[in-house]
Length: 296
Image (tube, rainbow, N blue to C red):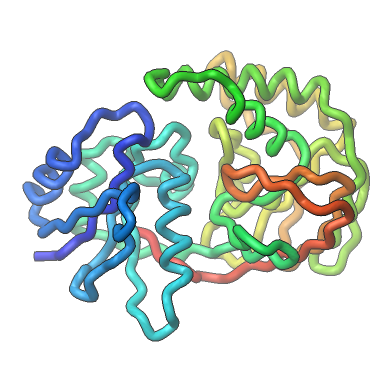
């Protein structure tokens, strides 16, 4: 019988599953289950007998667990991770092709395959120097700040939260001013004035914006999305379609790369779903760390 460690964020998303319900359900499928809430101080203490970790939460919870795993010593055991998607957007789970249905997701772990997963490494920052989803400048960090300052209630449904974010994004896309960014991708110069520069490690970010549909999480490359002034209408149309329940891939400039150098002539950026304020004229370097993690 496989021993699993359940790491649970009970505040994620709008699914009302207690920790007792989750433990009972997982054990009913043939697993032995240990439990920790990620809201407690000692949650990251994991027995070496554990076969894999189960992260019950959203993308932010996955990042929190990964941050602790990356801090572990090289000689310590590396744990594969399973995601039980309970968040709002669940971009990581969707990129990995995981089932959102709890029953089917847990049953899939009985005959699981491990999938290597690349991690983005950022040089030039003191903190938060890795990313799982994306790292970038322009429109998206502005949207994150807007949403963090909004008065959305915790009781608001997942669909309503995403719809609210898309409405706010549509306004931002029409009003946001371009900013110059020095961009070198594997030595090639792609500098220019942009509404958005996104280094994508997974397919989608934020309110399920599918900006990197050709990304493979284990191919050792990023998709760098460059959105210039002449792409404004295309991005606005994409967001408008999503608000109407239509998913049509936007035609944006996307360049594959492993080593990226950046200097955004502004101070706002984001790492995954967290906004970051840079020092002016910050020179940053981003590299791919191939197959650093394993997910089920």
